[in-house]
Length: 290
Image 1 (cartoon, rainbow, N blue to C red):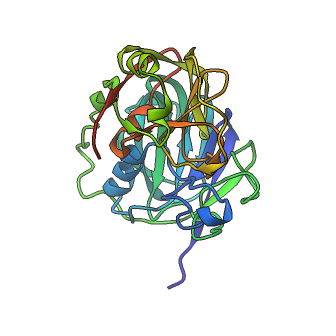
Image 2: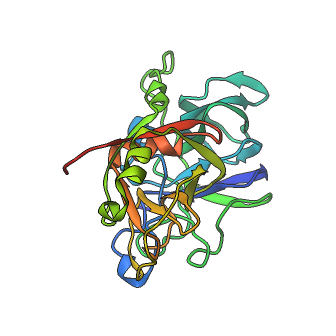
């Protein structure tokens, strides 16, 4: 079936806005990062409300200041961070389905709660698919983030929501949890008991060094573990550098690393970490068995 293509045009953008989907699964053996949406919970919620496939591509917005215009009708859905949103100049909710008509304009302002907002679209954005994924990543796709003048394709639709008079409420209180469940990493037992106890009892601060590759924590820990050979790492692996920095690996992280892997974060907690802002506090709640 031939379908008409519409375009979302970027009028203005801050850094860190990109197209992401379910990720580039199955290519780690070639050194290719997983990529994909960093807050899977919000990403899948947007696609669910739109009756899309779970892995359909969305626009992932990590900074305020995005302004876009649509040249054809469609349906969109906002999920994730609670933000200041304007639709054709009027303030609207930052969650739920929105009917789009030709030349409708959307502006995303300050983030009031959370740090990642998703803009899903009916049937997903139709950017180029490489290695079974539309997720943008430098060196694999031609773009790594949107810029002024970019046009992102999508399928047009005249379909209307079944009930335009009400919205499904987006609950966001799950992001307020600060005790993050973790499991011992391969090098956990190489830490001395004092360091282990400190990690289990301390609060850690999300630093300004937070992006799609990793989250660096502000507090330093003594590290007596010798340098190790490069080994596999995964989403949620917590590394301890030779300088005592704790680094939590995210979706765009490399697939191998040489720092000790002292912890591994449970999958269901990745979305919570993704929504944390710099200066927020977290602690590690160690689970003794998998």
